[in-house]
Figure: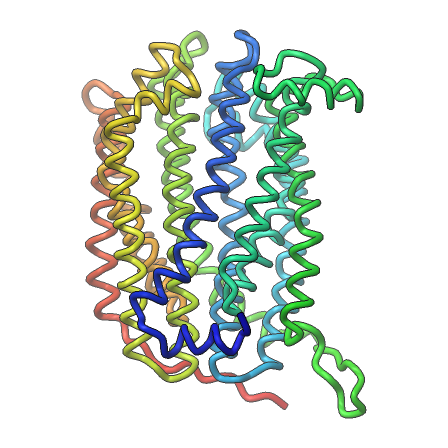
Length: 487
């Protein structure tokens, strides 16, 4: 399909139908990404008995800490997507290329910073800041070093797919991400298990490990597999992006040759001005989950009993799936809002955010009901140890009820970001998650602590977010985005 036809559908097609057609592949792609991550959790849960408990617990902590970097980069990507979509709607091709090229500089610097933190600060983050103890901490620290040093791969991977989505392509980038996750799975088996010990269905991994002389690396091997798979996936995504969208290349000069876009401080300042509130908003969400993990580690975990921490390592993967599915629908909302505002269709832009939010809430409602029926079996798939399973089920039964409200809030926040008003969404999250959530967790320490209580608190906070974001979204003033003047 041509980009002109995609633009026409976004700007003029039946809104509910076009939103569903554009957003569903994005949401499914995000879901499939986390599904492959769940398979990683399955592989880790089949490690030898002495390794499995600490590895499962470390898995959830590594996911959440590594997600901080991904979310910061996602803020840059969403800001870039808003600029690209609005400038594309306004037919500003040079502005599209400028936003893209400046965003690559910003992400490169961020990748270097996270590599430095991973090399020299992983131990402090895990043991001192979060209070993770014993064998779980011993596994988490080296795994986190690998993930932080390789964070640049997920920064650019998600960024390039977000740029394609902002330009109107929602299926191709998702398909490539899924292929990348399949590669991650294929590599994870030999890197985790080494020459022997893989489950029968994944015995091919032992053969690969013997041929390539890969030793048993456990959870750290899974981290290496993830980074390598992302590097390989970056190649076709980059090639397709530049080939399909020539507007991202350097603009032609007066003599017909390709000109250059100089590094523009004003452009970077505008990008960071849009990205930091969006980044901070999602970091607040991740920090809320890390605060919860820290409470569990300090209150319900001892040197000899880390079953609660292992349970959170499993359930956090489901929480992350919900977050990513909502972000998929939210990406679609942001594109529709920004591109319609760039074209001056203000009413259509605002309505599109609500429609995407309703689709997200409906999809997560179905997921929540399914977990109510099959949740115990799903959790037992990863760890059937009775004490771990009991903790995980008690938390999931409480928190899943608010998944639709959380998705609704996330999509409306993306819609607000698409209107270049990200500070509004940040304020809402900062007040509800940054203020009320820690307060309620502190009050919960009076009396008998349990994962059921923590899950209920988290569910109430997510439900509140859904209500508050709907009220705020209706009151936010949407206006046409005017492209900056260019010399």
